[in-house]
Image (cartoon, rainbow, N blue to C red; front, top):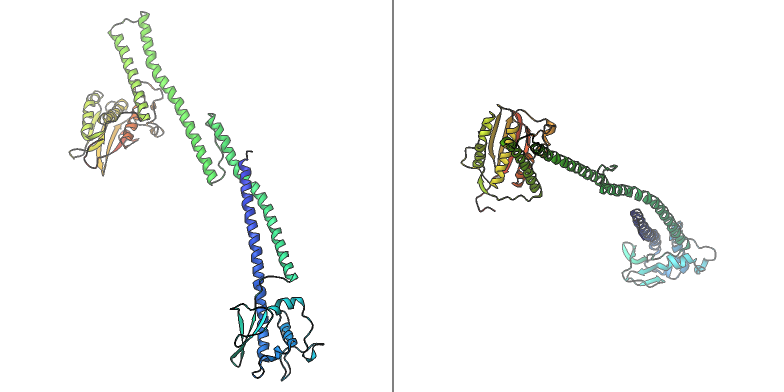
Length: 488
């Protein structure tokens, strides 16, 4: 039979509460009994002290303890007077033995009738009197060795010992009744606690499981493709954190789905444009509208080149995302590599009248561990990006600085700039600032995305921000090598 989480939690709480209450009742009962015994023994010790005082008063050096050994009735009266809760007897007349006055029927030293059971079998039975040599004088039981006894003194000298064996069990009916009443009270309290625990555990289990049920239902909707699903965060505990993490996951999946759809739409748009141009050119040739001359062939060739470049960029980006790009890393001088790449693009910048200014470190070389072809592709993409989007007559400043074990490359171009909301999206695939996505003013929007993957593959960082010249500032940070050795 399948047991729900609510019932499991409910049973677990009830079981824990029941075991705790039962243990508490048993411990309280045992503690109550032991504590009550200690209390009775303590009270009886006060009676022993009173009896010891009476015996010390009645002791005579010439007769010793004969006054109680030969007068059992007097011993009984002294014991009864010393019993806890009894009032001590009045002082005897001068010359008389201490102790209570003889009661009717006790004159002449005759022993009284049998003592009541609660005396004969309790206090009196556990009393014992020893002489100075610890010889037993009065005792109705065997005295264990090492039993505690109170010394009896006469003129500062020990003349005997009086002892009382402590209670080990309760036998008086009223004492047992008291303990039974207390045990019943404990059981009633335990029952009330269990009832309260049952109600509270039922409420608590439902309250704790409700967020889990909501999360389970939300997970089913999320698995069905409803990425807009969210759950309410009602607490700051672990369940609240789980709900918050679920919402973050759902939001991430929703953004990824939107990005996937946008990616498909953008690729379709990018591929449709050159294909449509090619189709139109070819149909014009077929219909005889255009002649198959060199101009028509150059137009077709240009569109094929653009289409090929787009497909190559998509392939490079896909391979980079999969981590399948081939990197042949070696120790190289990144400063020399940058100079070579700039030199190969100078003619293009001159044709657009864009000034190229470089600021490089004075050290002979800046060595890093990387793939020269991929880094050349990185620099070429950054230069091409500035060339496409910088107005004619503008400026591009390229700087390189070294700080510790990091080399920083800065590409700062002039106007036009990029709006603040668009800065964070420049590394997205197929994103371009112009909404028209006109291929005449820009590429497919894959260059910076490929640049980011190349930089990250070299354990570096790339970022963008507004340039002081009014355009875009791209900053690349790469780790330098720490020592020379064989490359991987």
